[in-house]
Image (tube, rainbow, N blue to C red; front, side, top):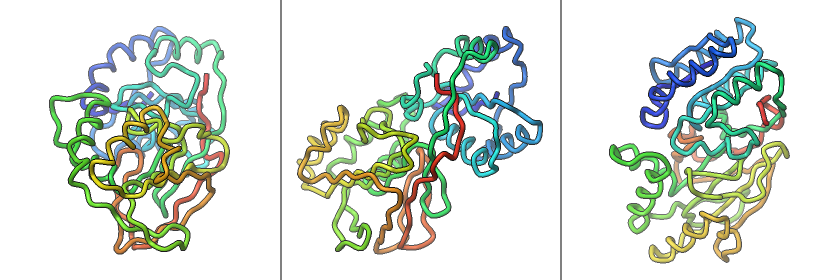
Length: 288
């Protein structure tokens, strides 16, 4: 098992004692924790070298992604199982297994009573992601959310979005050669959920070989809140200023190299033109 003590603003560290105990009762005692940012890749490589068959990852979307990427890129036959200890835990919502119950997962792994499936991943140029990548408003929200200390869980994203809703300036972007338009948000989603609260891509499948592109035109500040409010339940797709389509690949052109977020991690593209693409069947996961 691999865990990130910093996930969920410390939730990972608080939860690990109970997780250890639950897995130890079933004979699983190999538990490894990250000690610094980016440690997941090293620990995953070590686990692959040790011949691990199932990698249980306790954390949130960022930790799961940071483990899934080296696992998939290595072409490892090992499967990944998720335990939720993060802020949004969005990717786990696409799976049938309750990610909050370590005892149930440990028992089912011990008796072989779990199902698995191959799922897709995505990439922005050479940066891979597991659940979602976004440009625009979500980047501004993510940057601002890092300053919150009192709030926990999805409330962090919601509070920060409300804080930023009036002052954000839309970002011009050309999609697949179309004339540039100012966008509030451009999300490419492998899964259905985003930001811990938003049902950003209803109907998205993590095994269809495509990403759900959700492109929201910039609108006057007071018109933004109703769109985002509808996104909580997935109703935003019917809005006239929202474009939704499934695509295996898309090319975006910006005025300059854009910042984007991939599974909650801030990144900057190498150039003003970026390619977003699905990576079909990249990862084996425990499903239910």
